[in-house]
Length: 248
Image (cartoon, rainbow, N blue to C red; front, side, top):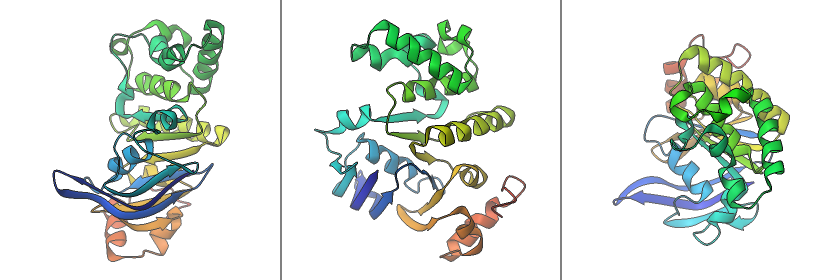
């Protein structure tokens, strides 16, 4: 679904990513993980064309992701950030429907899709008329997910979507998200700093350090077949009851 070939990115002259070559498989959940500043969010923004590489190429479904093609790529890619990233002056319904209205969808189609997504994400229909400040953190995240799925995108990108939530809400949303990923079978790329969360969601984990890939593979590969001493240190630093027993 996504491919990076020889990609590098610098900010203010400082290297942030690469050179990196990576393939994101179609229909699978790939989790990007690593310490703060390792390039996870930079990589996600490159995939959706919010920034462009200094060198190398990024492609989506064999289409180059450039400034000229970024808009069409974004219409085929849902994007979710921490706390939902909602517009405060729009109701939950208005946030979800925003792009569909811009594209001229008829009201009946919009309302049908919103009802479908509210059921999928277990969002209460009475909450659709509320504004973001009237919603809980978990509800705002569900609205952000509904908005990302509104156009039925081919891929879904999530940047630390659960990082700001308290543990109980986070656990509930983790269960719901995994169910949604499995039922929709879309290509998912999720950024997290939490190894337990990565193992919970991932078909494949990509561990980053200093803008480079240290190891990629199934979650069990990191525990049992570390490719580098850093992988062992990273796993040991987070090992605990949050790591699923079947992966440990």
